Length: 220
Ligand code: DX5
Image (cartoon, rainbow, N blue to C red; front, top):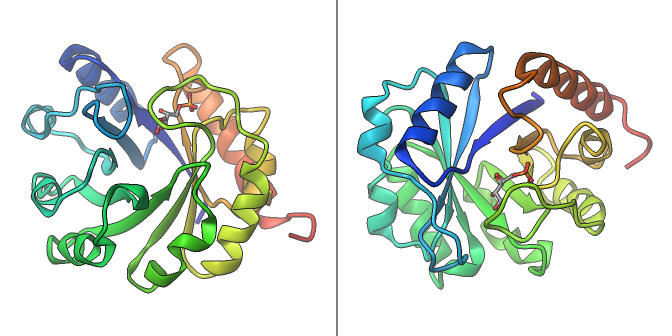
């Protein structure tokens, strides 16, 4: 399954509400909520789960925790519209405990790796992990250029997680999505390339490009 996942990386409740209503108006199945509190990354995003619950979201959320993750933080995301919780391996000494807490909440688990973290670092935990997320940029901001080392990192991620979901987050757009999917990413998070103007046609183009490249890659 190849999926384009529009991200929600916003500073205010109003922008969060309008991004959710934009995505709900289109044939979007998944969105990624970027959660940052100024600890793990310098930026702070709006990410109040109660407010989002009040928006009665109809699409599936994955929550990307760019925070120093704890089991308490995991339990905040118990809402039915949260289907997946992704944390950064760099932010905990007890990844197994975090993975268990996510499983006990009945959610899918994802491990995210910063560009400087070796892909192999996730290997011991992949048995408990649905999604291995490879950051294509330094986390915290949208609109950054794709880091070139992302393509080989995705190839390695697909090798060590052959039957799971491999996700890329940051720097994906109409110019890069095909090479990222061909490298093995079947989930592609996209922020700045999916703005309100022309959303539907861009979303369709991205989906077609990613699907075709993922299904018919040059030898990986
Ligand atoms: C970056 C976030 C990404 C970001 C993607 O820290 O995790 O989800 O929103 O933005 P683009 O697609 O603009 O790189």
